[in-house]
Amino acid sequence: MNPDEVSVFDFFAGCGGTSQGFSDAGLRITGALDHDENATATFKNNFAHVSILQRDIRDVSIDEIEALTAGKGVRLFAGCAPCQPFSPQNKNRSKSDPRRNLLQEFQRFVSALQPELIVVENVPGLQAAKNKGPLGIFLRELARQGYEYDVGVLRALEFGVPQERRRLVVVASRLAIPVLPRPTHVVTRRPPRTVRSTIGHLRPIADGGVDSRDPDHAAMRLSDANKVRIRATPEGGDRRDWNRKLLPDCHLVHGGHTDAYGRMWWDRPASGLTTRCLSYSNGRFGHPEQDRAISLREAALIQTFPPNFRFIGSLTSRGRQVGNAVPPTMARKIARSLLKSH
Image 1: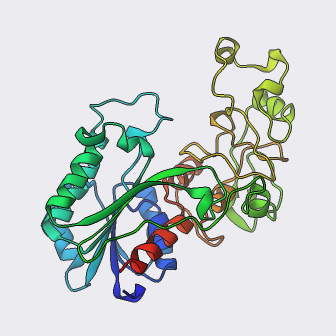
Image 2 (image 1 turned 30 degrees about the vertical axis):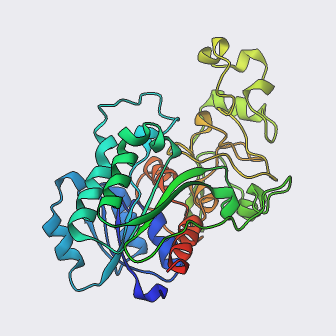
């Protein structure tokens, strides 16, 4: 199967991480859906030729998607739903969270429109409930409808993404037995992709600053207290390196989450980026050397977005878009493996 024979409809498209990776693999992105206004604007800004519907998938009918895909030869549905209901980073997870059912919403369109190929990506926590959970229900329905599938947890670092990020991936097909990609990067004591090799070339900026040449090379402003804290933090260090007087009250009695207020290492991959990846206090998101959190451009490069990819919205919104995205490099290799198996 040649890449240019495959048209894609990207559900939960976000800012376009999956679409970027699939496009880089040679697939044709012909339509997309997402509910977030800023993410949709970012998608339009980078995929001007693609029609994207800004709606909540729960309010979209089969007929609407069928009309959007009619005559475009769409053969692949991508469904990378928001992962927060199943993420271990979310301490307020609830079985009543309506987002837990988004995979079943995606299933509605699969069942009705029967694409030949399917790709789903989410956090490994989606497997937690096993057969009784959303993933088990989804896979049983795929099998009932005649799809073959492969499912597994992929380590992004083994596919050229310079961060420790593990993602659950499902590939399914009505045409052949699909196969997940095999790792392309051997991870040893000296990983091939590091923070330095990814962002070390960017111009220095201050906290709250913006590079005049790139409006997405922008960093959040630090509070006075956090300016003192980050100056007391060495490369790869965290709050365990501080004088006790610098600790926030919540950390005086709670010793966990040592990545909070941490700096990245230059010559290691980054920790997994989250929707709060621009916030110094919410993870190991401090720049290895400069006294600030990583910028939006640095986060996007760590996620393997192209350097000319432009984001729309407030800095907080843009950071959330990057943290939510599928790393394009990983999406590209998933697409290539799926096509190769056909």
